[in-house]
Length: 335
Ligand SMILES: C[C@@H](CC(=O)O)C(=O)C(=O)O
Ligand SMILES: [Zn+2]
Image (cartoon, rainbow, N blue to C red; front, side, top):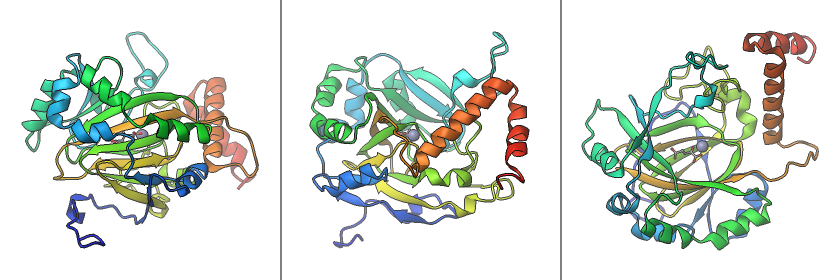
């Protein structure tokens, strides 16, 4: 039961177990001015009872989406397990064209699927089958009804936050339709994000950029750049000794909740087990201008460290030389 004695729409048995504890991300009414204090401080907050995606809340059932999303192929990922770790295919070594890159076997397959085929596979899924995850940019290729709903989102509200906090332009709105239990492993994005939950419940575990050394991101040149190397369910504590010290926060978001995921904040997101399919729309914005005021913000230090890695890779050419050079520069001199 929740505080008012209402039956909770989910229970702890639907959450995967991790050897970490998390603080609760605050949930604030959308008119609460404290929301702006959180955004200004680059801290996550769940915005509740807003009209940001009201038309979607009213109409975007799976049946409606199947009927209206449009007949073109939609971007879907197929996985042998419940994890859908993002990879940048531009960073994969391509033998045929002998491009620069890393020898890499993608953990998921990216396919274009018609919405009815996607929905059929979700409905007929059995344990042991491949899982699928629709992740489609909401562009003009969607049906007219969806466009009509989309234009009726509360753009005044989100554009108001974008302007007030001097964010860059909106770059995309992605529609996510996940199977129950699907997981997007821990990673960070270089964009501000309003993560709006339409249907079902998702557990969102977030860590501030200061936890960089506990979350061990892949090297910048790797296809899994920005993704944590740690498997949260089977952490290799020998290889990643600081992971057990990671300090994070979490929110279980349900229909109508909008989670603000600040730029460079790590997030590990999963659709609750046995909770049915989930639907989310995100709003990605470029970050605002980064003025160097001291002390520097943690996310600025992450951006600086990325630039150092990129510069060294550019100059040294061989990624195997980056570690030894950095160790020679730092060990015994800065440590
Ligand atoms: C894909 C999404 C996570 C999820 O909903 O599975 C995410 O990482 C983001 O919106 O930045
Ligand atoms: Zn993300």
